[in-house]
Image 1 (spheres, rainbow, N blue to C red):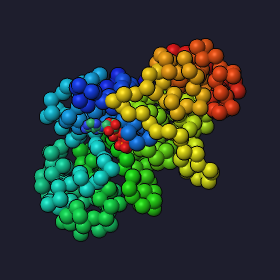
Image 2 (image 1 turned 90 degrees about the vertical axis):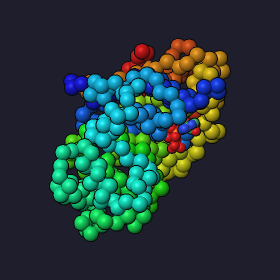
Image 3 (image 1 turned 60 degrees about the vertical axis):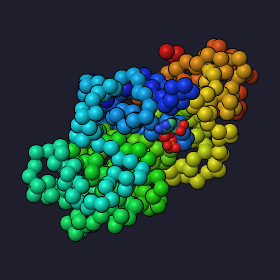
Image 4 (image 1 turned 90 degrees about the horizontal axis):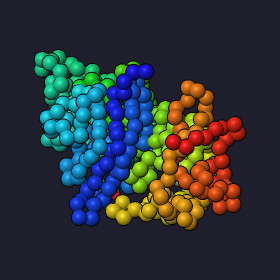
Length: 352
Ligand SMILES: Nc1ncnc2c1ncn2[C@@H]1O[C@H](COP(=O)(O)OP(=O)(O)OP(=O)(O)O)[C@@H](O)[C@H]1O
């Protein structure tokens, strides 16, 4: 199997020293060429900080652990090196596309600059390339819109232009942080289609952060669920949607609309913990219908893997006490409240 493009090991990001707020608390994953990975979770889970930490975009916090991009360590790298990686290898798309642009410069000229910063092209060729990029992301009359200022673009167009900027250095990985949030539903659908086409046509990897499971499940083959700074479950889209194992994932699925099925939504009771003083043990235990005193509020939960989906399936893991002998199961582990916690027929499970 090919080496991963991106290897994240025990990433930890904290803000403040005296009363530190640990926004990302030891997360690890790999991303290979052509893979699409989504990180979902409620607001404040640390999704955005986790991806900003990868590429040196945290300026008032401390990032620890390891982030290897094509084997090159990025944690502790010089700003110049990080800028170079952001310019070429990794393209970034943010929620607020207008913020990607300088308001007093035309969109076209800014894309030309981004193209020239990463590729040895004449001004004329860079202009042609910028117009091609605007066309590729679906801006009608790209040559005519080249000299417009960012505020002259609508929200959806600005997001498309932001994606063109991210493509200027011909990246192998696109990191998109809530790229559809705040846009009208019909505009969102267009942006989702655009990402799908770009990933396929350019053979890029995608790391997508969103609280919107619908958007993530339309674009990502693999999904990780983040809660209070940690990954609580990971697996393929099918594994997570069809047989979620962590009570939080189950609750999260019930709290959001399905992509194509109408259902009664059940908001998750309570609210996420404050990250400057998270609960002991499993961080979800105060909100978990299956939590058991003395177990779930004690030691950190183990990561359990599930052999569902056959040999070639993604690794499916949940970090939960509910599957271990420490948690007596049966009566104590309220299976009525969380029927999704029971492994599917024939599924094996093993503790790591
Ligand atoms: N610069 C900062 N200084 C202090 N705390 C921060 C800073 N940036 C983020 N945080 C805190 O880190 C935690 C995680 O924030 P983050 O933005 O990553 O969450 P999120 O899952 O992306 O949710 P949202 O979609 O609401 O942004 C939050 O508690 C947030 O208040």
